[in-house]
Length: 361
Image (tube, rainbow, N blue to C red; front, side, top):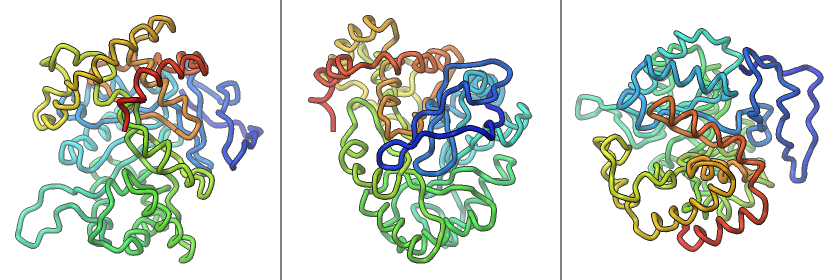
């Protein structure tokens, strides 16, 4: 698995301050070598695997500690070094499951990266309870302590503001997030599904106040959802060096092809509380497009899921693509996308765009 980076590793600067993908040959890997590549998280010095593993919907709901341990170990052996979570996932139980799995795996802390996100909070009792939907200082200062306890960690590598909070001044949020880092409870902070305007405001405030600046954003990004990553954030990559840890490369499973005949009983769309996904998952036009993508996948010798994940990872602005899985076979198939990324030539990408771009937002 990912070991210590060689001290003589050199990075080749690319245009606009970004860096080329780190070759596996420059990394010390144990117990076995993989073809996983590593990318800088924006302009930070942190290197994340181009594919990562998330816990939304699955951990606690579909995946217990034993299954999480098995899949995290398999991902780790395949070169994955980043594992994504959030306080709100399964009301904190997702963090607990991941924390217990990490404890059992006994990995050196240097070798893996863990994230969590704050905004919605957990259920609380009492009429004055500071429950959710906020990024104020009180909530954030207590939220990080709760996540650390549930995950059994001394610090969390990446912390995100899970959504923007129109009722809290951005300056207050920036100070609170920066303080997490100054206190050693987190190493980097960023945002998730914030507008480009709000991200820039936060970055400017941090610079003016000599605070820790937001480093990364976690937006949804897949073949049918492109505008924010490809257009709205465009200036931020060059201006502030924004890194991206994108989520939902399969559009919650739509791009895997599994929803062309309805909602399978063992799928995400059938999970309690996920009914809001059903309309999008059963969209006739998008499912017809997925069928057309099968020809592209067949020509590349890959599955639909691998094609979709590779497509998202092919974007040089993306630091890592967060994948999800409820079983080991699904995870292994998803990780096979690593071999597909180099096959996405200009001609292949044009074929994909011809099929999916007209349906994208």
